[in-house]
Figure 1 (spheres, rainbow, N blue to C red):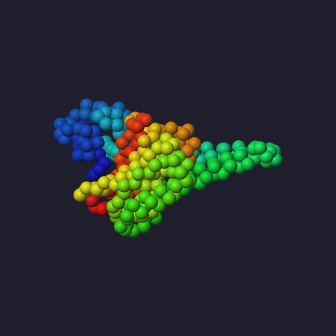
Figure 2: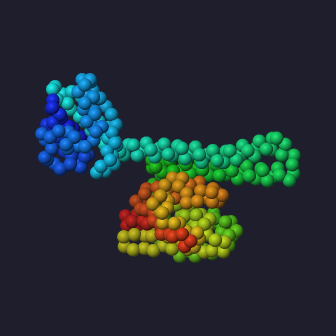
Figure 3: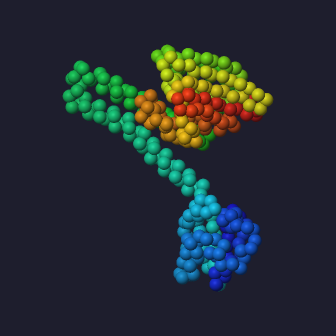
Length: 324
């Protein structure tokens, strides 16, 4: 059983414990039979659960928090078993983490959707109040509305894309994909931004992998888009593909503002931004790198980052041998 099972006698001594109990509470495999509960498991909530059953004679279920030797969320169910008390312990740490992620995601989505909607409503209200007849401002307000509407559409598109990737829905059958072709398509899409910022593109690409072309294009597009956005005007972005017997690595390197080391561990989280104000100003949704990570996981690979503040950033898509 994955659930831990404990049986205590009428004086509160342990008469039975399965292997799962030892694993959940990091106990030695023997030596605790015949001892009192708190001598072995120093969790007051568990002792209180047992006492609640002893007093009421009814089943009792409670959530508990284990702090040492490792933080865990536990669900305990205790009931009478003749003269004894039986306790079932389930480790619900992973479930609690998923609930927290889901809650955070809903809160973040709500906030991210509200930001452009608030701006749109503000400009519309201003136009309705009379600014529509102000030739010096009406066009500017309409352009602001259009920009925020585009941001809203991009955000919704990324949310839907991430949702599909998480459940592997809408993924076409894998085929041989020539990465140089997908890179060229991405560069064509980003051509206006490249021209506007006068970015030099160094493209040393070549090689093929097995995958889903549209998803790989999206991953490459997201990395190139970020590299261009965070490059200084007149800067350089390098695209390099290197291959070994076991891996193929596609790296995108810019020489812009870089990412401080303290942000590396969270940079692929949904809605995580190093500089929130700057990211929104540039039209980022906060989901691009999370999408890249999921795409690479679907392809059996990974995405890596090397960067330091003020020294640019290098993102690498790593494909393992079975997908080459």
